[in-house]
Amino acid sequence: MSRIPPLAPAAAPEKSRQLLEGLAGPAGPMVSAMAHSPALLQGYLELSRAIKRVKLPRALGEKISLAVQEWLGCALCLDAHAEAGRGAGLSELDIALARQATATDVREAALIGYAMRVLAEPAAISEDDLAGLREHGWSDRVLADVVGLVSLNHLTGAFNLVAGLEPAR
Picture (tube, rainbow, N blue to C red):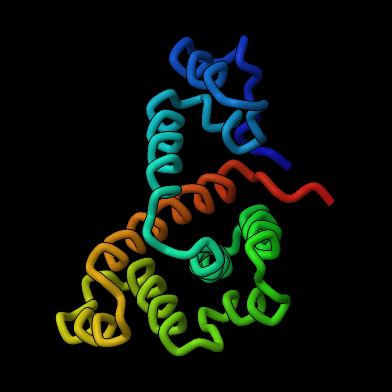
């Protein structure tokens, strides 16, 4: 049950209404509920658009999102990222492994592990950790992009959990 109810554009604060009306299609429940806070809605929309330009293959981005959302426990996000992952070519095994914060590919597993450390213990990431990721071929741009992707997933998962938004079953 929703604890922060979605708002119709007409009921939203003026800035949120403008943002909602500027969307390409109808807003989903999360975006409509975020409309209570024009600052949050604007920040989410801008970060979401920016993260679409990360230098990660889409399938790998979905694996990272699945790992983060599994840790957070957001069922709505897990469903959305599993579906997006399938659309990006992930198998059911890929999805299951990502939810366990790993992958069959050692390079990807290392990056997913890094993403989880960014989420849970960023202060513990050392120069040696970053050097190991670079040895796997990950660039500093990718390392920075992962921080952004993890941050976006934390925002959406935390908001959905607080708002009480769940998948339609």
